[in-house]
Structure formats: structure tokens, C-alpha cells
Amino acid sequence: MKEDINRSQDTDTLREWRESAPYWEKHRDVIRTMFGPLTQALIEEAGIGAGQSVLDVAGGAGEPSLTIARVVGLAGFVMCTDAVAEMVEAAERAAQRLGIKNMRFQQATDDSLPFDSDSFDTVISRLGVMFFPDALAALREMLRVLKPGGTI
View 1: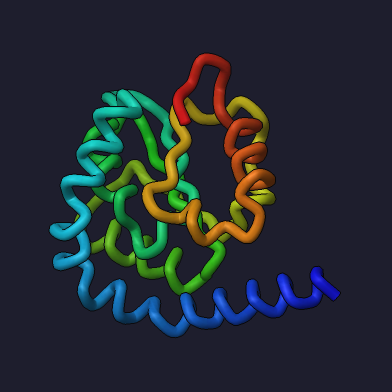
View 2 (view 1 turned 180 degrees about the horizontal axis):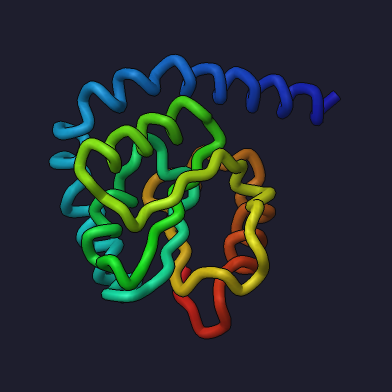
């Protein structure tokens, strides 16, 4: 019974995110500005720099991935993931519009990341963790895809 309730809540949450995706895209500049200090702190605390490979779990409509892509430069890359296809599509459109070439995009749930183990120098999730249905499973996955000595 508890699993059915959790599954129902997950489905409702994903539906709500799908419905809100156009608004995240429409108000991208306001959202980027509003969360800019948090994004900058995340970059600094994680030690993100040129040439790194960064995984953004639950990256939504593209931030902070878009900002981080500029930091890592063309020698690095950012993989932007989200459970909601509409968010991933919005992120991809933003990168195209901004001419960002060092980003990749993948629809993926936080607890089942479709990447090899030890794939990324840094794994981040700016605001997504609070929405993960099973935060412990998500953190295990994030640690699995993190290279030894990497930063999460």
C-alpha cells in the first residue's frame, strides 16, 4: 500500500513538473538571476573548473548547467539530466539559443542514472535533492557515477 501511495505521489509530482516546464523556460532569465548567487556558491564549493566533466542531476530547464558549461569551457562538458522530458527539451533549446556546444542532455531519474560508473569529475544537484522520492538511492547513484576523488 505504501509503495502505491509513493508511486502515486511520484506520478503527481512529475505531472506537475511537466505542466510547469513552459513557465521555467519563459522565466529563465528571472530564475537564473534569482538563483545566481546559489549557482556561484555551488561552482565555488564544488571546485568546478576548466576541463571538467560535470553531471547535473535534476537540472530542470538548464540552470545551473548552462552557467557551468561556460566555466568548464570547450575542454570540459556538462551532462544535464532531469526526469521530465519537457525540462530536458527546454534546457537543450536554451543551449542551442546561447550557442553552448559542450553540453549533453538526457532524460533520467535520479535513482537510475544511465551512465557508466566513474564517469564524472563532479556531480551536482542544485535544488533537485529535495524532490527525490528516495534521496538515499539517488545519492548512491550519484556516488556511483562520480570518479574516484571527484566532488559531489
